[in-house]
Image 1 (cartoon, protein in one colour):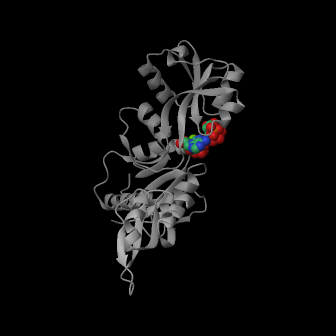
Image 2: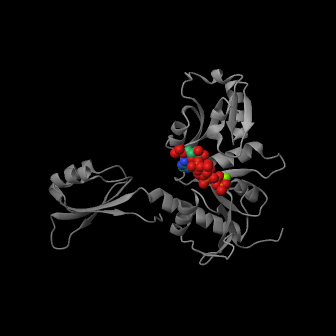
Image 3: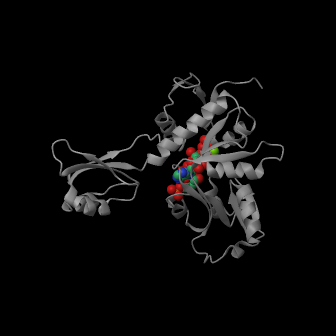
Length: 297
Ligand SMILES: Nc1ncnc2c1ncn2[C@@H]1O[C@H](COP(=O)(O)OP(=O)(O)OP(=O)(O)O)[C@@H](O)[C@H]1O
Ligand SMILES: O=P(O)(O)OC[C@H]1O[C@H](OP(=O)(O)OP(=O)(O)O)[C@H](O)[C@@H]1O
Ligand SMILES: [Mg+2]
């Protein structure tokens, strides 16, 4: 394969992970010019390009070295890790990305009183994840038939081609619509940044390291809020006690008002109106809650 000096990331062309994935990369300072066929996107600022493909192909493209990284569901990555041949390069989950959350679950007909995996013995289970299902059945010591389907797994019990299913669940709406109910969870999933176990030791490796640092900066503060307020020294202690979790607040003097302080606190999550009102009652004034975009320690 021709050596590359630009980093190449595989992403889902069109699906649930496309928009949030592109948005995350944008927050990391990566923007792209899309080609005519919309398969290849050239990175404008940094030497990072995108290849837009079916999500199922992403782990294979990384293992072959066609791409350096991929944004893909943990479910797809884990299935690949279990089913790829031994000669395939090992992949790892470099970062969880916090979107595309769902779970891979066993679901059974609503009328079945499911108590334990042992009840699945001798039944047939339809799935698009034969690797993950097979491994789970083995660890549970259950012998069941596995029917592999590419899609529309949820209709298999109604068609009589399987007794139960093993599929992705998020709201549970698909299961209810098909008179099924969730019985056991095999895997909690979300989108992840996948990459080779051994990272390239050249300029691509340097760029990858930079990207990981930026990702951490974005992911860490995505839920964070910066709280700014003014307080007098006498109410500082009671206000500090009410602050939502996070590192110690920073205090700044207010010019010409020796009794007053500006307080700045990084809060780990949302700051609700109720919390704000309570802090105000404790004596705070001029309060601002700001979203945090990036962080570089
Ligand atoms: N209902 C859901 N809610 C949230 N995330 C989901 C849901 N269903 C799937 N996902 C996650 O999003 C990933 C992509 O799902 P999507 O339905 O877009 O894939 P697909 O139909 O296999 O697309 P492709 O055409 O790329 O093969 C899944 O592998 C999973 O990680
Ligand atoms: O629990 P829910 O919120 O209903 O989500 C689960 C459904 O979502 C996914 O399918 P999707 O809607 O992407 O359809 P597809 O698999 O046919 O693309 C998944 O395969 C489930 O069928
Ligand atoms: Mg797919």
